[in-house]
Length: 255
Figure 1: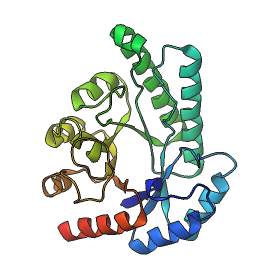
Figure 2 (figure 1 turned 90 degrees about the horizontal axis):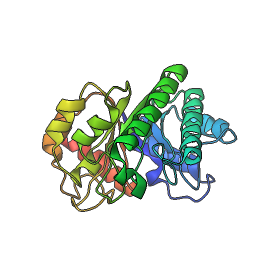
Figure 3 (figure 1 turned 120 degrees about the vertical axis):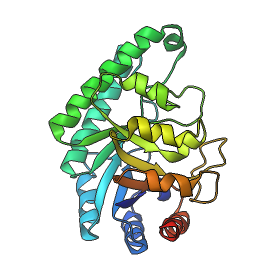
Figure 4 (figure 1 turned 180 degrees about the horizontal axis):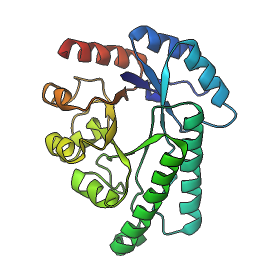
């Protein structure tokens, strides 16, 4: 199944969302990835709206949990608990939406976590165990996403991601574009996590930063990578509908 992320929806309100979904359906997408970030978080109030629009066009949903200003591995107990509370609420809402999967970011580094790596890892894993429990409780798959090259972000390579989730029963969202900005070791990522990958994000870049370009406009070796990707949901994370049109054509031409 191929879906389109709301990274390609540029409206500041949800007023134009239905027309955008209609266009996405006409392009041939099977689901919409609801990006629960400002300015349109997934909430109890707008959940019926999302459900109504997606049902009207026969589309499924995946959800990307909020990540800006959250840190599930914070040493500050109040920040950590607030972050976890938001993730739990997102999983609950995703379950009500019958979403196929929820993607979330791992915790990120701070000055205190850099100086206390062991404790940071302990906090991080315990937070992920709680999220794993909620995934099971609500019956929604959750994937922790590998991060792009950026100073404070964790899990930028597969070895570090494996270290973080060691002993935790949780899935992985494989972001191909993110890995292209770090190690570019696509084969190792799939070998290491192949059985745990529950979702895939597709976008391109020059290899220097997280640009979310149309497929084929960057340096990701798609001809080598695509045939090896697992048979799970794939979501395009591009910046607009034109990029989505070009990307889905690129995928069809390769197949």
